[in-house]
Image (cartoon, rainbow, N blue to C red):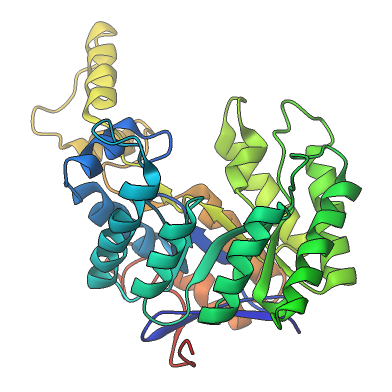
Length: 351
């Protein structure tokens, strides 16, 4: 069975055909998050700390670290991203011993991340583009780490799944030339938005099966891409993930946390109740209020996608005796935090 081993100094996460689905937490990423980007430029890492701990508590097995901020004071990421990557990795490693995924489009930031990360991190990513292959694959070999391989090349992202498979095959073959085994390649077949391409889901399922059967590689994806631009995205994601798992997908880069209800949403609901003449107890607390009206929770907790993944693990016999499912469904505070810390102790270190 193909197994991709990702390690911190003390923990191991295994991505594999015979393993529970591996969740790679995506939240430590300033892309599209203006507030986080501004905080990082100002040297404020409080959101990074919160996101790291919340994702681990929700059940992430690996944490993706992306330092892709374009500073207003210095728009050159080649200068700003490597030291920021180092700082973020050191910070997260000081909070948790969960394995890491080093995520950057800047070669120097990838190298800095590999120098800083303890254990055997996952590198994100290499593509079929010649320049990227020539830089990233020697890094993968030098540090003996696994790598995410994204199925696009110098021609861009093809809508034809056969072309995307050919790009993945090219990357696996080029990696072999460096002595990098297929089990250290985790292919991202590229999930297209279902709102823009009606066959996007079917394409991914077909591609994942083909990648598993013909190349023997593990797979991952940006799970939320499939629902981009559509209402009730969580509903689509919740259906997509178990179906992708059934097709053979072994991991996903995703948000494992259901974000807490904001004070603005709480106040809007209270104003709505007042307008309708609904009387509320004067001493009702926010958590009781949001629970009563089905708004969610004021606390960070595992998202519905995590529930779907845990259930699918149970149904595919990757949760022997249902232990993880039972633990996941315990009330908070009853026998430990929900989701656990992921991984297992021990394992080899990076050479």
